[in-house]
Length: 109
Image (cartoon, rainbow, N blue to C red; front, side, top):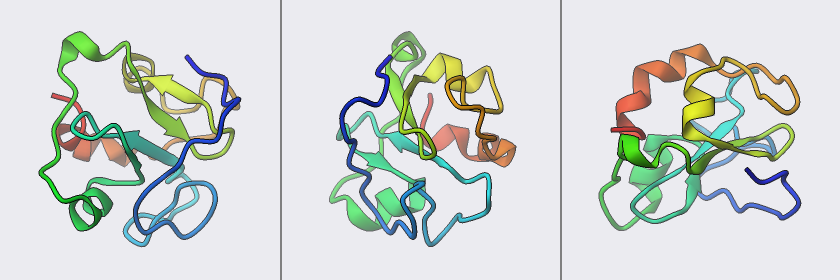
């Protein structure tokens, strides 16, 4: 996992520097997902659909050790398997939106 030593670009319609977007911007909407199809971080599946020139592709389970979730608060990249096992950032403790589980199928196969 990366410790956030380098700046990670987040694509899409962000509204602040903690990865909130025009679609999801509550206090706990502070993650961006790296899409398997393009390797780009987006705040949500809708941002990807609006910005990318291709269909989104999910991460297969055999790649869930990949750091593909970005905490918008501390900028740490988190492995998919670690993100799916928690409701807060393992680095800074920022709470994540538990309702993101309803959209899991857009990111993780």
